[in-house]
Amino acid sequence: GMLVNYHPLFPNIAAGGLIEETLFDRFSSPAAGSNTAYDKFGFVANQEIFPGQELFEGITKEHWFKDAGLPVREDYEHAQIVVNRMDDYKKAHPEISEAELVDFLYRMKHEMMQNYPKTSALLPTTPTDLEQAWYLGVASLNISGVDIKWVKENGMCLDNIEPGKSTIPGGGRGAFATRFIPKGTVIAPAPLVQVMNKDGFQIDKEGNATHQLLLNYCFGHRKSQLLLCPTTHVSLINHKSKGFNSKIRWETTRPSNLNSEGRSYIYGSMDDLKTDSSKASYNSRLMFEFVATEDISKGDEVFLDYGDEWETAWNAHIENWKAPENNGRIPAIVMNAKQHPLALSNHTSMKYLSYECRLEPFANELLHQNQKENIQEQDYRSLVDVDPKEWKNPGHLLFREINQHFNWWPCEVVDIGADQSSFTVTIYTKHQKKRRQFRQLSNVPRSAIRYADAPYHSDQHLGSSFRHYIPIPDSIFPLRWRDDYVSASSL
Image (cartoon, rainbow, N blue to C red; front, side, top):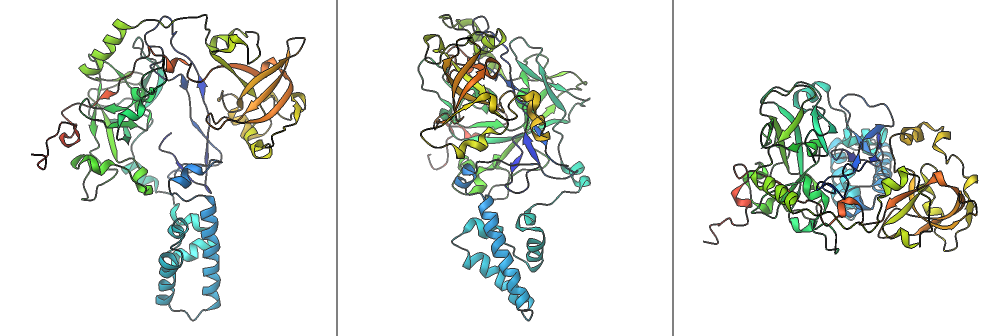
């Protein structure tokens, strides 16, 4: 999923499934909080996709891409206006020679548009490109399908493994072979996101886990601050010291990126991995390959030996683990399963809990319409298409059964009807740091309200939860990347 790129004009997939399932009881299992409770996240096609086409997702908020220096919709629209005017000029002056046209394109791209670097990057450089940009649109210059023969010869399978409940006690979810995988072949590639300082994963909130949960899914080394986080579902592969059937190695078939010397980044220094303000620096620069160390049959779970360091840390965690203090707290998932009666959001029983309310599909489209301080109260019964059972739009139906979060929003119960079956609620935006009210609803039924764990109170934030990166073996970790590496200059 993380391999999918964004395109403002050519999205062909949409984020689909997402369910929440707590696998371990926090009061009885040392594994509680050590793995994610979210599962089955995926994408659904919103149009026909042909072999060799790249997958793109479209989003409504482009601020991250703007900050990263990447072109967004307004840049494509600006570039298209420039292209249309360039084409008009060319047609109005048929006497222009090819050399003059090429020079005109160069000057437009590198001189006249230099104050608009993102627009400039999208402009055509050849007369042929100009014709295509005018006829098919600027975005078409960088979007082209790949021959399926090339994909078969150069691509790597991502569907050799699938998720399932691990056979390892405390393992949570695991990776299972979808077909026979011969010894020595690549099970799955793992492009890696480099995190230069693992201290960035620390959490300072008192009583909470010491590090972000993501640490458990990243690779690291005891003598380095570097973390390498996989972007494919190899993160499902669990540890087994005896009976493992896979190993990791640096990619050998095709370096996904080369440093300034034209070599793989593993032959360079840590400085080569550091990011800067250029958009290219956001790319994954390294990749692991998970390789079968023995024949793996269809349905077998895939295991990796994490090594003695990780196993020692896990055993110490189990030995020293103590269940968190109960204080009468009941997790939200249990409250929902038992359809526990609702209380006002400011009630003392809600200290560790919050609420979510179900709205109509794509309710976020209403955000920009409701930014007034005095928001008018609506009757929930008047909302159109709010009940998933009544959804008719094919786009909405994609999400009805496979996503438990798509149309649920943070809310507060501010009043309870006399019959205890209808409620008045305040709806908030999903952005935790910039949360604001945007709807006020009355006569909301119990079925449209559910419990949620309050921020920083789910299992993954338990102070007793296990945290440790997956160690990279000394045998493949570059010496130059170690904190104790002695360089010639330091000597």
